[in-house]
Amino acid sequence: MMMWSPDEIASLCYNHFNKLPKRGKPESGREWTLLAAVIQITDCPEQKTVQKQVVSLGTGTKCIGRSAMSMKGDVLNDSHAEVIARRGSVRYLTEQLLKAVSGQSSDVFCAGSEKGKWRLKAGVSFLFFTSQTPCGDASIFPMSGSEAQPCEPVKETTKNDDSEPRGLKRPADQDLKETRQNTKHPKIKTSDKQPSCRNSADAEDEADAENESCSERSDAELLDLHRTGAKSVPDGPRDPLQPGLLYHHTGLLRVKPGRGEPTLSLSCSDKLARWCIIGFQGALLMHFLQEALYFSAVLVGKSPYSRPALRRALYTRCSHVKDLPSGFSFHDPELLQSSLEFPHNHTHTESKHAHSQGRISPCGAAISWCAVSQQPLDVTANGYKQGVTKKALGTSQARSLICKVELFHLFLKVVAATEDSELPETLCGKDWKTYWDYKQAAESYQLAWTQLRLQAFPQWPRGPRQLLLFQ
Image 1 (cartoon, rainbow, N blue to C red):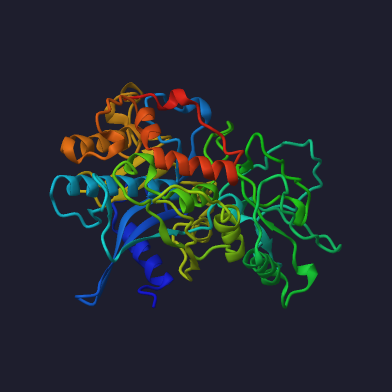
Image 2: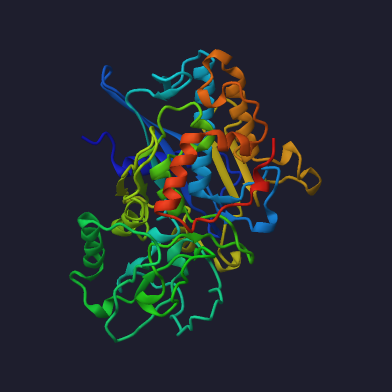
């Protein structure tokens, strides 16, 4: 029996956002943003209660380019809402782990059966909410003639034309162009250049995807695809970029677009798929955890949405991955949609827009809030704290509280607070120095990640090692 409804979770997240200070929020009628959140569910059978708590919330739509990345780990490379929410949840979990190893009461963890290891308390689980279908593979699906067509018609494009469509690149439905062809529309092609494992359930979903758009509608109503601004990874197959349903391949790994410069940030669809295999806790926390942490459900707010496309992105592409180490397993989260729309998305912003306000644009700031004891709110722009001066760049005052180096230092507090006799085997007698050292030393996590990369995502780009050598 479900202990919550999608609308209840969406309302919880939207209300939480409304209670936050104005700083970092979009200007009404001129700016839009997206929201994501991690919700902790605590089932208490003895009290016959179910607690639902937003433990991390994020907003944002932007990424930085390669040249802006830092070797100090002090800049946020990816400020899409989903990534901000997940990073905030890691901050929350690290503080909860610090409480546990210090002998205080933790709302999340209890002692595991292995030396130095912890596990989730009974009745605790996590949900992931996003106000918009995640960018990348999940946002590619047929649109119907009854849906608004916000952009110009697709023009015939050659394969060698690598020009970028101008204008908004996110959300996906804002990167559409209408095509009005009277010919029969071909089926969406799934690239055979990426490893895949198809079973009857997947076939049913593909059939559902087609039926979803075709049943009770004529072929003439199927005009185009919902598209994503995320491009296939550098070594991957290229999209055909042809009109209508031939614009995209599906199932590909994709990188998010930057402002005139390529990024190294994988799409939110790809990152969510990765979390379904290796958990959302990251490498560092796996030193102390007996099992990886997974989302039991992924919920999407009211927006262009296709459950089969979301299932393809999160499940079909990596459901065949096997030989995972102890503590890891493939998790197939429940996929649900709410009927409630985020009041600050592009559609609502457009409806409130006045001509005198100029062009509608995505909000430049990203908000992170998480349920920690000190400084829960963190507002950034261009990867650094919002409002920081150029003189302060490179100092601790400019850093986001969820950037790599800050999360690393918080993790080191957990290590320091743990008695030597209670350290997990991967940290006993070790004198690791850098962020890279500690990540690589999380052996089971690295093995799970290797299996995922080899079996499902061989073209996942590897970031430069020198970006992870900070202390």
